[in-house]
Length: 521
Image 1 (cartoon, rainbow, N blue to C red):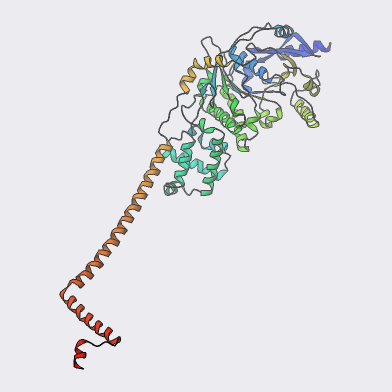
Image 2 (cartoon, rainbow, N blue to C red):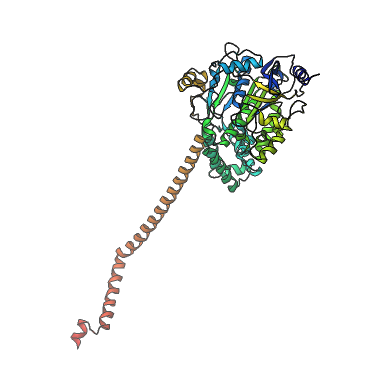
């Protein structure tokens, strides 16, 4: 059999699924697209996670856009973390042109322009519904891991959470946590020692510095109320299309700790709240994490372990996670091994290290008789990728060079006016952009600290008053005794006699006799 026919048969068999699927593009061999060999991705295995990788400008973002809009068509909502600010165009239909039509003719699929329903969110001052979470919702374990604390420091954080639970002190934001830490290491030190044991002052100082570091990256905006309900990520519109939730993160690229904090909290909240779903015909939610290296590059070992655990377990909730990054090596090997769908765009080999990395990347894909993978990776054009997925039985599909379809939605971003109109119409903005400042640990403990200080000042004032009264009383008693002595009749007589004798003595010393003595002489 001719190599091309063998290839065609392999792809048709490997990408033919019984259940529903989405069309990613057309298979290519010898740099030619085959119109009768479509590359499909089964909906049933999209909760097995995935990766979209490739160098800058290779088309990663457009691939993400294709997947999100095709999922929306199937009624599957998605969450997109938009680091670069170039995903908003998914809310508007594309304008067809000659290049798009030509591409789809080669693939064998007609092009249809279309938009997806979109909701915009933000962690900062970007336009969109504000995302917040309370410190309590993180829990002591996750909060400690985000701060990068050791076991001793994590134990103190656990005590703080327990103390607040036992005393009905809501931990809503970082100010609440800091105030509780301040109180338990100061005015409430004896109270906490009696109930929970001694707290190290050095450890308290370290924890406080870690919290301040998190604040410096803008985390105080993220912690608080109204707390985000992750069920809002699973909405569909009136036409049954899955809503694409886009979190606008363009202003936190230089704050990776905030980004990883937010991402991990969202994943933990989803895992905690979503019910076990087993094997669904299609995922309940798909999450795309763009610029995934920001999540991993500053994450501690404990944080990486937590991410790995969540990645392994969250698929049972019907949730798929896709990492979008420049190089597969950006994703830890333990996480990379959990990814069922891999879409690899071109890689560039400028140095010996680049060539070595490309060879290692090629080894991550199934063996194939049709491509020299390490060479192909450097020759892929824009909008082309090598693809490997999982079939409905969880077996990897044949590796295939794919010409990707064009996005149905706009490839460019929305204008400021278009974005403003969508934000103003959003029910999520009305729900989450009201800031609620309920009484929490900060206010309650501030009152206790202030009351303790007032009591301390009052005690000090009383002591000073008592001391002054005592000194004054002593003075009055001494003066009264002298006055009694000096004013009595006997005292006056004795005083006059003493005065006469003193006068006589003094005159004698000076050689002056008394009047009586001079008369006798």
